[in-house]
Image (tube, rainbow, N blue to C red):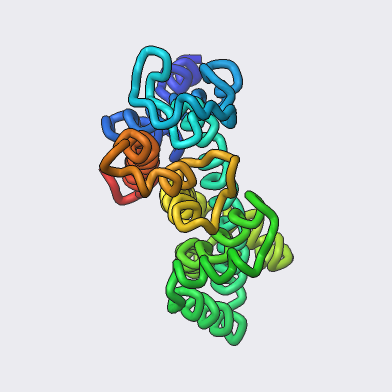
Length: 291
């Protein structure tokens, strides 16, 4: 009985994820980034209820008005309320950022996992393909693909995913190459488990830590990529609002109406910084060598 009570009194050992959560909470910038991102996501989700005006409502008599009590962030060249378009634009920019991240991570994970686990000629071919994709000038290919592929937001997600999976593939391949040498993989092989089952049930779950950190950083990069595409007229098309398209519309009024570019620019900056702080915090928290 005493042994049982003593065992029950001992604190449970922390799991890898609980330890990671404790380390993440100690990173003030990462926590602040998470809070800011949650607020931005909530504002985007609640846009239909909190926007003071319809985002595409045109008022010719109210063109390029500075911030005021009637229009807190001013109006654009068509008399549309900037705050309303900023809130609705957040929905598009975040949707593209997260959707393209998920697509890129899925594609990169499959390619990296197969290359690292199978090895040999397949590994060589997939890695040379990865190197080839990395050698292309990013924005030139983005512009070319945006002309060839049609389909609105889906088009942008596909294009960004096609050009952002390579680093994920390299990270996953490196992790799989290391993990496939572990004893539990040899034990699974000895028990007759198929290679596919070993890869997807035993190896990949243990490679999630660096994958999650990389995926978080991809969101910020993809938001910037969407903004660049929309700024040059290859992304979200009018009248749909995104932060990049708002910058594109404001480029002729940077001096005379600076608020048109300042507010979407600040939105992009704050969101990308928040996501990058979260990514840095996750990378440090999930690093087994970290203290």
